[in-house]
Length: 202
Picture: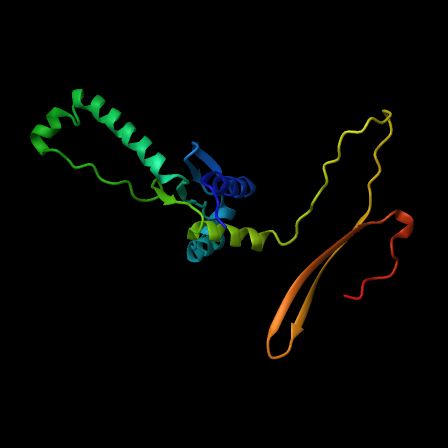
Protein backbone atom coordinates (compact mmCIF):
# COMPACT_ATOMS: atom_id res chain seq x y z
CA UNK A 1 0.00 0.00 0.00
CA UNK A 2 1.20 3.50 -0.79
CA UNK A 3 -0.20 7.01 -0.80
CA UNK A 4 0.13 9.82 -3.31
CA UNK A 5 1.44 13.21 -2.12
CA UNK A 6 -2.10 14.59 -2.47
CA UNK A 7 -3.51 11.92 -0.14
CA UNK A 8 -0.73 12.55 2.37
CA UNK A 9 -1.50 16.27 2.21
CA UNK A 10 -5.21 15.59 2.81
CA UNK A 11 -4.40 13.56 5.94
CA UNK A 12 -1.99 16.22 7.16
CA UNK A 13 -4.38 19.11 6.56
CA UNK A 14 -7.21 17.26 8.29
CA UNK A 15 -5.04 16.89 11.41
CA UNK A 16 -3.81 20.49 11.30
CA UNK A 17 -7.36 21.83 10.93
CA UNK A 18 -8.64 19.58 13.73
CA UNK A 19 -5.95 20.86 16.10
CA UNK A 20 -6.52 24.50 15.01
CA UNK A 21 -3.02 25.19 13.69
CA UNK A 22 -2.44 28.51 11.91
CA UNK A 23 -1.65 28.14 8.20
CA UNK A 24 0.96 30.74 7.16
CA UNK A 25 1.45 29.68 3.54
CA UNK A 26 -0.01 26.91 1.42
CA UNK A 27 0.58 25.55 -2.07
CA UNK A 28 -0.05 22.20 -3.79
CA UNK A 29 3.49 21.12 -2.83
CA UNK A 30 3.80 22.39 0.75
CA UNK A 31 2.17 24.01 3.76
CA UNK A 32 3.80 26.32 6.31
CA UNK A 33 2.07 26.29 9.69
CA UNK A 34 2.45 27.63 13.21
CA UNK A 35 1.43 24.79 15.48
CA UNK A 36 -1.28 25.19 18.07
CA UNK A 37 -0.37 24.36 21.68
CA UNK A 38 -2.19 21.02 21.42
CA UNK A 39 -0.34 20.00 18.23
CA UNK A 40 2.97 21.28 19.60
CA UNK A 41 2.60 19.10 22.71
CA UNK A 42 1.83 16.03 20.61
CA UNK A 43 4.41 16.48 17.83
CA UNK A 44 7.52 18.29 19.09
CA UNK A 45 8.51 16.21 22.14
CA UNK A 46 9.19 19.18 24.46
CA UNK A 47 7.83 18.00 27.84
CA UNK A 48 10.21 20.19 29.90
CA UNK A 49 9.22 23.32 28.00
CA UNK A 50 5.49 22.65 28.37
CA UNK A 51 5.95 21.77 32.04
CA UNK A 52 7.68 25.14 32.55
CA UNK A 53 4.91 26.99 30.67
CA UNK A 54 2.18 25.29 32.71
CA UNK A 55 3.94 25.89 36.05
CA UNK A 56 4.84 29.53 35.48
CA UNK A 57 1.90 30.61 33.33
CA UNK A 58 4.28 32.12 30.75
CA UNK A 59 2.91 32.69 27.25
CA UNK A 60 3.61 29.65 25.09
CA UNK A 61 5.73 30.02 21.96
CA UNK A 62 4.86 27.20 19.57
CA UNK A 63 7.10 26.05 16.73
CA UNK A 64 6.56 26.67 13.03
CA UNK A 65 7.12 24.03 10.36
CA UNK A 66 7.32 23.92 6.58
CA UNK A 67 5.87 20.54 5.60
CA UNK A 68 6.82 19.65 2.01
CA UNK A 69 4.72 16.96 0.31
CA UNK A 70 6.36 17.00 -3.13
CA UNK A 71 10.06 17.91 -2.63
CA UNK A 72 11.05 17.86 -6.32
CA UNK A 73 8.42 20.37 -7.45
CA UNK A 74 8.92 22.49 -4.34
CA UNK A 75 12.70 22.66 -4.88
CA UNK A 76 12.17 23.62 -8.53
CA UNK A 77 9.85 26.44 -7.49
CA UNK A 78 12.34 27.61 -4.84
CA UNK A 79 15.20 27.59 -7.38
CA UNK A 80 13.17 29.73 -9.79
CA UNK A 81 12.31 32.16 -6.99
CA UNK A 82 15.99 32.37 -5.95
CA UNK A 83 17.05 33.10 -9.55
CA UNK A 84 14.49 35.88 -9.84
CA UNK A 85 15.59 37.30 -6.49
CA UNK A 86 19.27 37.18 -7.49
CA UNK A 87 18.55 39.06 -10.72
CA UNK A 88 16.76 41.83 -8.85
CA UNK A 89 19.53 42.09 -6.24
CA UNK A 90 22.33 42.47 -8.81
CA UNK A 91 21.33 46.05 -9.43
CA UNK A 92 20.72 46.97 -5.78
CA UNK A 93 23.61 47.18 -3.29
CA UNK A 94 23.58 44.36 -0.75
CA UNK A 95 24.53 46.60 2.20
CA UNK A 96 24.91 50.23 3.05
CA UNK A 97 28.10 51.37 1.21
CA UNK A 98 29.11 53.75 4.01
CA UNK A 99 28.98 51.03 6.68
CA UNK A 100 30.65 48.54 4.35
CA UNK A 101 33.56 50.97 3.82
CA UNK A 102 34.32 51.26 7.56
CA UNK A 103 33.23 47.87 8.91
CA UNK A 104 33.46 45.54 5.92
CA UNK A 105 30.77 43.29 4.54
CA UNK A 106 28.83 41.53 7.28
CA UNK A 107 27.84 37.95 6.42
CA UNK A 108 24.16 37.10 6.34
CA UNK A 109 23.47 34.89 9.35
CA UNK A 110 20.88 32.11 9.47
CA UNK A 111 17.70 32.78 11.41
CA UNK A 112 17.69 30.95 14.74
CA UNK A 113 15.26 30.94 17.63
CA UNK A 114 11.48 31.34 17.64
CA UNK A 115 11.34 32.88 14.16
CA UNK A 116 12.99 29.87 12.54
CA UNK A 117 10.79 27.68 10.34
CA UNK A 118 11.97 24.09 10.10
CA UNK A 119 11.50 22.20 6.85
CA UNK A 120 10.37 18.58 6.83
CA UNK A 121 9.74 16.40 3.79
CA UNK A 122 6.56 14.40 4.30
CA UNK A 123 5.81 11.24 2.37
CA UNK A 124 4.26 7.86 2.91
CA UNK A 125 6.43 6.11 5.51
CA UNK A 126 7.93 9.28 7.00
CA UNK A 127 8.27 9.42 10.77
CA UNK A 128 6.25 12.65 11.05
CA UNK A 129 3.28 11.11 9.24
CA UNK A 130 3.42 8.09 11.56
CA UNK A 131 3.60 10.48 14.52
CA UNK A 132 0.47 12.31 13.34
CA UNK A 133 -1.38 9.02 12.91
CA UNK A 134 -0.37 7.95 16.43
CA UNK A 135 -1.49 11.31 17.85
CA UNK A 136 -4.82 10.98 16.02
CA UNK A 137 -5.23 7.46 17.38
CA UNK A 138 -4.51 8.59 20.96
CA UNK A 139 -6.74 11.66 20.89
CA UNK A 140 -9.52 10.19 18.74
CA UNK A 141 -10.47 7.11 20.74
CA UNK A 142 -14.06 8.30 21.10
CA UNK A 143 -15.62 9.66 17.93
CA UNK A 144 -19.16 10.78 17.21
CA UNK A 145 -20.34 9.70 13.77
CA UNK A 146 -23.35 11.23 12.07
CA UNK A 147 -25.15 10.17 8.93
CA UNK A 148 -25.82 12.82 6.28
CA UNK A 149 -29.34 12.07 5.12
CA UNK A 150 -30.63 12.93 1.69
CA UNK A 151 -32.98 15.87 1.62
CA UNK A 152 -36.51 14.50 1.69
CA UNK A 153 -39.54 16.61 0.94
CA UNK A 154 -41.45 17.04 4.18
CA UNK A 155 -44.05 19.47 5.36
CA UNK A 156 -42.70 22.62 6.97
CA UNK A 157 -43.17 22.87 10.67
CA UNK A 158 -42.54 19.17 11.31
CA UNK A 159 -39.21 18.07 12.67
CA UNK A 160 -37.44 14.93 11.52
CA UNK A 161 -37.30 12.33 14.31
CA UNK A 162 -34.01 10.73 15.29
CA UNK A 163 -33.48 7.10 14.40
CA UNK A 164 -32.02 4.88 17.07
CA UNK A 165 -29.10 2.64 16.27
CA UNK A 166 -27.32 0.14 18.44
CA UNK A 167 -23.61 -0.30 17.73
CA UNK A 168 -21.36 -2.70 19.62
CA UNK A 169 -17.59 -3.11 19.39
CA UNK A 170 -16.13 -6.20 21.00
CA UNK A 171 -12.80 -7.96 21.12
CA UNK A 172 -12.42 -11.74 20.99
CA UNK A 173 -9.19 -13.21 22.30
CA UNK A 174 -7.95 -16.70 21.48
CA UNK A 175 -5.18 -17.84 23.78
CA UNK A 176 -3.20 -21.04 24.20
CA UNK A 177 0.55 -21.25 23.63
CA UNK A 178 -0.06 -18.46 21.07
CA UNK A 179 -2.35 -15.48 21.41
CA UNK A 180 -4.61 -13.88 18.81
CA UNK A 181 -7.11 -11.03 19.11
CA UNK A 182 -9.88 -10.08 16.72
CA UNK A 183 -12.04 -6.97 16.76
CA UNK A 184 -15.68 -7.10 15.67
CA UNK A 185 -18.25 -4.40 15.12
CA UNK A 186 -21.97 -4.96 14.91
CA UNK A 187 -24.71 -2.43 14.35
CA UNK A 188 -28.45 -2.54 13.91
CA UNK A 189 -31.26 -0.09 13.56
CA UNK A 190 -33.62 -0.34 16.52
CA UNK A 191 -37.10 1.13 16.65
CA UNK A 192 -37.88 2.70 20.03
CA UNK A 193 -40.20 -0.12 21.05
CA UNK A 194 -37.57 -2.80 20.41
CA UNK A 195 -34.64 -1.31 22.32
CA UNK A 196 -33.43 -3.82 24.91
CA UNK A 197 -33.94 -2.67 28.48
CA UNK A 198 -31.32 -4.97 29.97
CA UNK A 199 -27.69 -3.96 30.13
CA UNK A 200 -25.11 -5.70 27.98
CA UNK A 201 -23.01 -8.40 29.70
CA UNK A 202 -19.67 -6.77 28.75
